[in-house]
Length: 130
Image 1 (cartoon, rainbow, N blue to C red):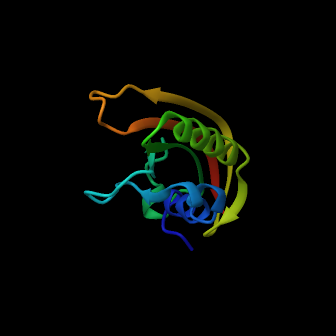
Image 2 (cartoon, rainbow, N blue to C red):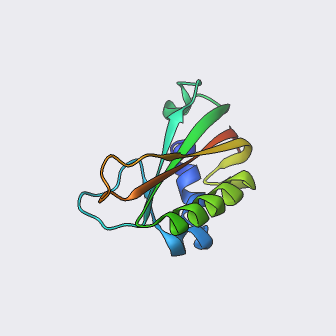
Image 3 (cartoon, rainbow, N blue to C red):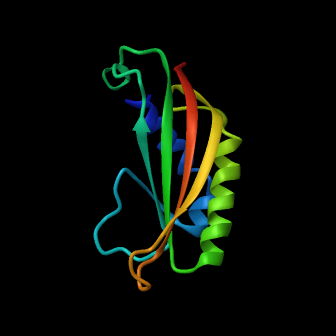
């Protein structure tokens, strides 16, 4: 059993080969010095603060997916794929039943022309233990 909803979500996300074929997926933080494309997933918010200590049985979490790529075409297609995949989430993984209630996306501007493009997909995921 996963220790938290974000761990269970990462277990599920890691099995989505359409995404992992396009970009390496990291949980919370990417290693320093890696090359693009890659995606960092992390739980931005979960109002139920007891979920990490195993006392909560259900909750709603906002999951963010930061996608880093070299060109706009790959970024747009990867963002669309992540959005479709996450929007279709309805699974039980790692002892957690999860489904998506809503998804949004954005493109963040680059500070320098040499920086990779940064695309974001946010999802609101309802979860319960079991």
